[in-house]
Amino acid sequence: MVEINVVYAGDLRCVATHQPSGVSLQTDAPVDNMGRGESFSPTDLLATALATCILTTMAIVARRHGIELTGAKAQVVKGMVSQPARRVGQLTVVITLPIDLPADRRESLEAAGRNCPVYKSLHPDIELPLRFDWGVAVHQ
Image (cartoon, rainbow, N blue to C red):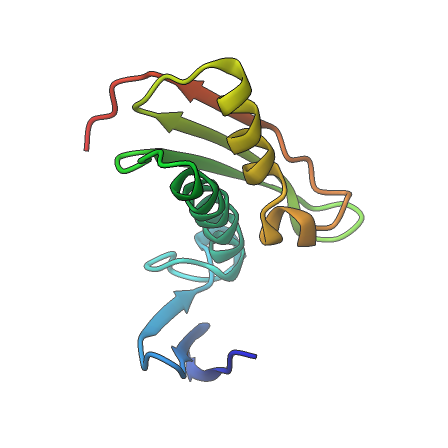
């Protein structure tokens, strides 16, 4: 188990501390929901969790097969809905990989991404379009 402690700092901001490492991050409510949008919102962190989980899980599987994914990138676009309640309605993810692999090697890595813990933990009402672009020059 991992403990994360969160303190409400006022003005629609929270500070979360990851207890094992001591690293903290701050959230802010988005502009369209009474905040200043000066940091990640809680739903931005959900989108970030999905993208980083996909890349990390793919990299774990790649490492087992001697494949290096350094430089791979993820872009995630979060779409909110307001009915029947304000919530994340869509998380569109594009994974860009700087290497090209045969179809059978791609399939195992793509399956790993689609089966990462965050992807599998999201509510089925959230649309999750996911695309993999292989062999694309990635600029940092």
